[in-house]
Image (cartoon, rainbow, N blue to C red):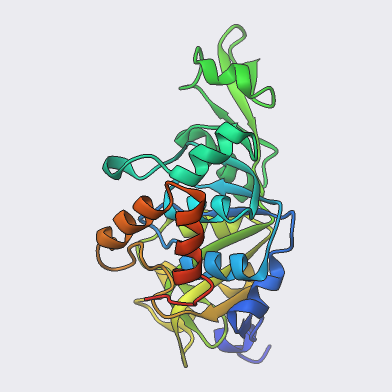
Length: 282
């Protein structure tokens, strides 16, 4: 008989738990980087660290939309291309640095829809070369996305459907509540992070704290835990989603301050000096 092997023995530490700047070495200039929506673990401290590093020519994918994280990176000159369904602040207004960059032609915008981005990521998640989607048939967006192709349903000739190439970002970047010492990341109800980690080539996760535990052996936590073999690096970053939400509401007062400053280049530069280069994360 084979000796009994515990799950713990089969799960050696595979993920580097390190400081943030070291973790972000997995995000080289020119990488395609996917970030989650505002309600699902926005990697704000990681974004600030990328700006401090002087990162350039990142190709950003918002899954499926973004506000401050995308606008901040674009305004700081980090992003050369964005694939998104929307960049904006909802009832607070437009995204000023995104708007200015588009008008000036400083970034390339690949227009998308929320279902299209999710479908393309899920194709990558499942190892498929493409996904199919019906709801955008007849829309104007097909005219600006030549990589989205209308094909015949192979099972019903004459039945049109849109084929979307699988989307496999180089790096998924998100913030989560917890990681364990093995590099397993607990994301709670933030299911978007599972899709991001599964679909991307690697993942960098910032977390509120690292616990001396193994979440995969915890019956309560395991269902909301992304195993370490999907994670390239973990870095502790307390309040790493601020001013966006993690467990509570967004810091709306801070967002209003950002929007007031970011209307101009000079104001945006003052914001960067105060909250990014000054390393004020709270």
